[in-house]
Length: 237
Image 1 (tube, one colour):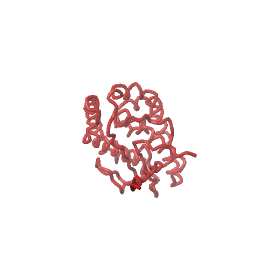
Image 2 (image 1 turned 90 degrees about the horizontal axis):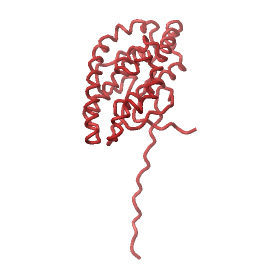
Image 3 (image 1 turned 90 degrees about the vertical axis):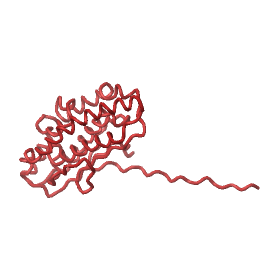
Image 4 (image 1 turned 180 degrees about the horizontal axis):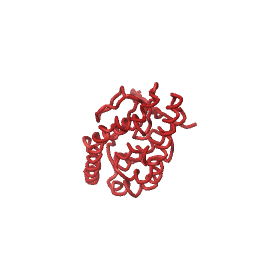
């Protein structure tokens, strides 16, 4: 079986037992400070994306500082979602940071593109992405897929597939103290799909998101680059 190709966005999460049986019932309260900050961060994300659109249109490049900011917002959102109602897979409170935290069980990275298509920037975020947005709408619940990124934090309340599965996992956790591994793998695959589409619509890559559910907490490993062999030295005869 062929290993799936590695997408420029890498979303990972490590299920972190033991999990409290009942803590998930109040995580919506505990996460309110994060929701408040993320509301403003996603407004800034939208503004940065518009600025990036014009930068790409005229230069073919996504300004590195703007790119890193938007990656940070997505990374923060994923950590909060992993803690709360996008996964419920850890009880470790997420840090208030845009930076990568290697000691936190949820991580997100996006490869920086050296160049981007000037023409695609005008159509990929709405026209080309439309089939993907319709699918993601099922995952996150109706209009949430078309709203701001902060809506991802309310998946459990939106009626989406992710919210339903996470609720089922929470009920199982409440009565058994265990998080079903099959549900976890499936939920991580759905979240991975959602964030890939988010990165594409935010103009962070020209690579179209695959119509593929890559389940599990870990992304496939990157293929190591073959070492460059020096050219043989020839001596005149």
